[in-house]
Image (cartoon, rainbow, N blue to C red; front, side, top):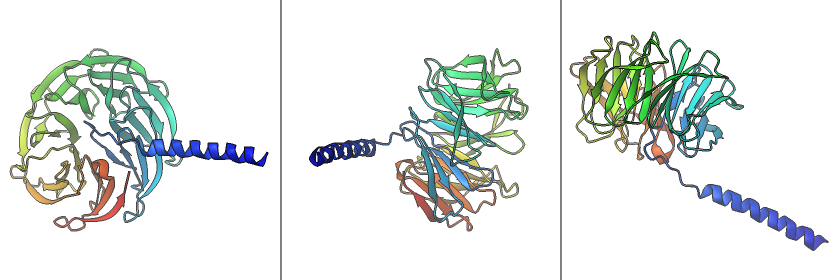
Length: 340
């Protein structure tokens, strides 16, 4: 009897070991995925999408010792995430969009799923007035009524010939800006969200990848994988104008943009793949200057900065999550690290 029980126990342990082994052998896949680093309002928690590994929720209360709170597993790769107050939106490829309540990062709960049928969810964004939700796919953008996030209702769609990697709403939520991975920036009139219309577009030399508004919602910072950072005046949505260009001429790819909160300093933080992250001074927009860059040893695909602009948080591709002290802007120092 004892031998039989021992045999069953060994089989059970062996099975558990096989499951663990299989999970450990899963290879991280970040192909074509831009990572987002999102900070909670109190700057104690960071949320990072890590491709087929799902979403990492990280305690950053001690920036020298970041700790994993939770790895939130998803059934498909997470291509993009966005955060509004305590609600996290996750674009999960073939699984569509998941909406999560993250008011308690230790116990996140799902509020709703959005199935985009035969399309692949690539990006997601809630409007400034929280009335609309836009989902970028491999075929275009789909709009939903977001007044009740537990039951978003379909409003309309706009078809494109490229994958939508990032989305931004205007301040009045009547215009939609799309980073089209095939050719650049598209601007949509969504005064009537059931019938979105293209207002204008700007073709980039590289693929549209990330968008970030300045504080007054007039200048749109645009990143692309194979060309320079461009600042576009979008006050007139039908006649957007490229105002400034920053090109470091280092053959790097810009995956992500973060803007500093110091309006006087006007610093921009760039995730530049194998070139690490870069700090650019836009105080004189006609002549932007590189303040510093740091080789992170990985492929930096996501970047964020705290409100005091003393810490930079980096999603470094397969290398993991890294934190840098930038108290001296010209001399960043790595102080914290968490592997995937």
